[in-house]
Length: 535
Image 1 (cartoon, rainbow, N blue to C red):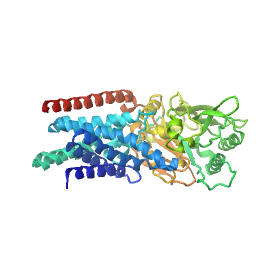
Image 2: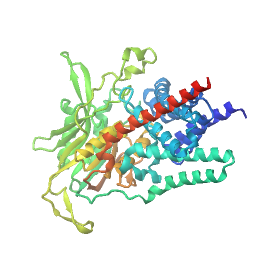
Image 3: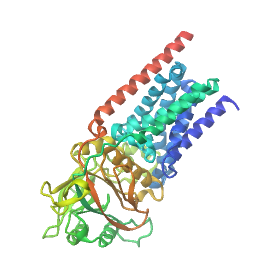
Image 4: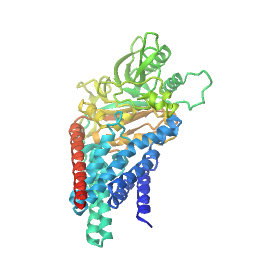
C-alpha cells in the first residue's frame, strides 16, 4: 500500500475515531487513539500535505459531529460550512505537528509530547473564540466524562483535559514509531507512560467542599410539538408554555423551593404578551415559589416591528397580584447563524436558510448569575455527619450559575459565574430544533464536565430532553428521555469555594494561547531553517 494511501486511511480513521469518541457513540478511549493516528500521519509527510490530511480528518469529524446543524437548518450547506470552518484549525495543527517532526522534535519525547499537546489545546481554545465568537463543540475534553482524565477538570478546565488526551495519543504514536524502528523496549516504555497518564487521574482527589446548604428543586420538560403536528393557526410558542404549565401540576408545591423551566419556555415575552404571562402567573401562584424560565425580549422600532431581541432567563416570583419578574440574565454569546446572522446578504447567496433567523439576537452584558429568594425553608445549614439542621438564618438567597444552551461549552461564562459566588450550575436549553440528533446528549456531557470542573451540582433543563441532574463527580443522578414530558423533584446540595480551574481560568486561557503560539512559531521557524540549510 502506497504512503499516500496509508496517510489517507490514517486521516479518515482519525476523523471517524474522533466522531465516535463523542455522543451518540461515546467511545471516549478512541480520542487518544485518533490523535495517535493523526500524529503518525503528520510524522510521515511535509507540513503542506499535513494540512490537507488534517483538513480531511477535521471535515469528517466535524461534519458528522455537527449533524444537528443540518437538522436545524434543513439544509446541508450550513452544516458543511460550519464543519469546514472548524476543520481549518485541525489542518493547521496537523501541519504544525508535521513541522515539528521534520525539525526532529520527535527525537526528544519530553519536548515533542507536551509541545504537540500545547498546539492542539491552543487551537481548540482559539476556535472557541474565533470567528464570530467561536464554537467550542468538539473539544476533546468533553469526550472524557467517563474516563479518568475528567478528574483533571477542576485543576485545569478543558485545556488540561484536552492536553492530557493529546499527551496520551502522542506517547502512543511515538511508541509505534520506536517499535517500527526496532527499539522495542523504548516503545514499550512510551506506551506504558501513555497508559499511566491516562489511568492515574483516578487517584487524584477532587477538591470537594462541604455543602453550604440544600435546595429543594423541581424541573420540568414540557415537550415541543414536532413540526407539522399542530393544527393550522395554532400558536406553537404558546403551546410550549401551556405544556410546561400542565406538566408542572405534577409537582407538589410543598416539596420544592424553586422550579426551573427550560430556555424558550415562552418565546413570547411574558412581560408584554398577556396570554403567556397569564400561564406563567397561574403556575407561579400554584407553586408559591420562584419560577426560573426562559423567554425573550424584543427591541422594536416606531412601527412596533421587532428589530432585535435578547435570550433571557428570568426569575418569576409569585405575588398577591399574580407575579413579577425579579431578575433577568440575558445570554452573552448568541450563536452565529442560529440566533443571529452575520453578513446576512453575503450568506444569502449560498442558502436561503439565513432568513430562518428573522430577528437577530443581541448579546447580554452581565454575568450568568441569578439570585433566587428561597426563604428559610429552602436553605438549610449542613451539620456534621451530612444531616440537616433547622432552617438557617444565614441566608435566604441561593445564587445560581445560569449559562443558556450553547454557553455551557464556553469556559469564560461558567468560570465567571462561579467566581461571582454561584452555588449551583443550571443550564436551561432548547433542543427542539435539533430533532433526534445527538446535540442534546453532547450538551449533557458538557454539563457533566462542568459539574466536575466547578465542583457544583449541575442541572440541565431542556424543552424536549435531555434534562437531568449531575453530581460533583460527574455521575448522573437522574435524567429524562428525549421527546417525553416529565416533571421531577430532587434535593441538591449548594456548594461554595473555587476550584483552581474556576479561579484561574482567565490566566490559563491567556497563558495557553501565548504558549501555543510560541511553540507553534518556534516549530515553524525551525522547519524553515532546516529547509533553508538543505537549499
